[in-house]
Image 1 (tube, rainbow, N blue to C red):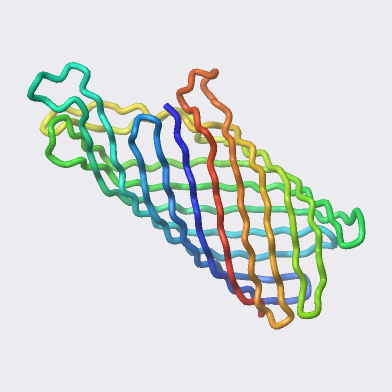
Image 2 (cartoon, one colour):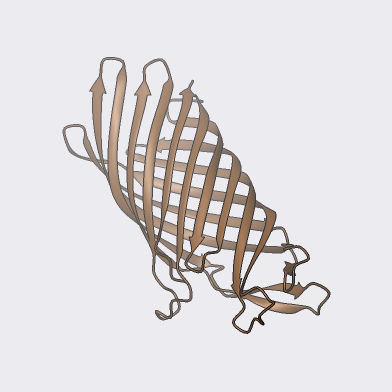
Length: 269
């Protein structure tokens, strides 16, 4: 089954310089998710993110550590085809539900900036992150063959490495930065298959197999950032991510790709 996912978001941040080499900041953001499956099912949702971070500059190396919390609210529509439907039964059944989840994450990032030309920099980077998700159960209502599931918690650890080419363009009231690059992400722990306990209305419990997460993904990234002398900062960025089928090309976890587009505005004290 194929899935086509798009995520758009926006955020605000405030950053304070503790010293010449140490800064701290807070982030408030939100995003919209739209995921369409090849069988006609879909998930639409939105999420609110709150986070804090600290950045330390050591020569050409920037080290960032942070933590965040996200609350998500989603509407899911599931399509089921009844291949043995009688003349009075519906051949296609549609089920809907609303559910929430809460996500907690911590991360550590290192980025090295190497000048390769006039205002032109090559920047390799790496990120290690840990994520914990607490997801509500689902309840599809009282229709025939509607499913309800128990809540589920899971966690995973990921590593990401990448490289970007960055061009800084100074101007009268600040500077603009254009960057593009490629990244590779691997799930180090937590990609295994899991089960969610479910049941048909009034029926016995059974296990629903949740496919293991794709362990490997490649991202193409682009970003424009503006920083003004009065402290205002703005950026817009986009990522197209493609995941490798992690079940021996069976198509079990296949995805067409994922678009993530975001914009942000903030103030640097």
